[in-house]
Length: 110
Image 1 (cartoon, rainbow, N blue to C red):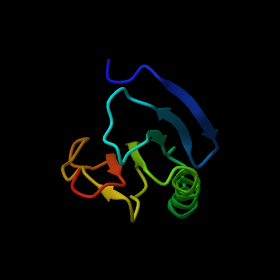
Image 2: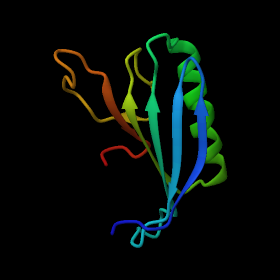
Image 3: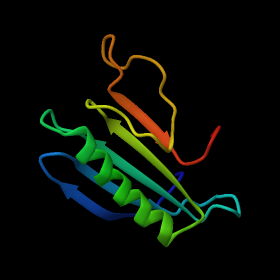
């Protein structure tokens, strides 16, 4: 019920990264926010942290330029490190003692 207007904006699959980008236009948003971008991310075992980070930043930067008033949420399996930005919200182990499954958002304190 939160959002019925959802479209697949982009998919990407390589040896370094699997990504699904959904654009959501929920029924109720604050006036400052026009779009919610959801990114589902999986980094394969053979993933390379530096290449993966560059790819993710390229995808999210394109979205930020196209829609300046957006919320971008990135969730997924980050086996090989983390992003320097946006804000990371998972601060506890998600698999045993490791922190693989992370969630990021471009809004601080959201």
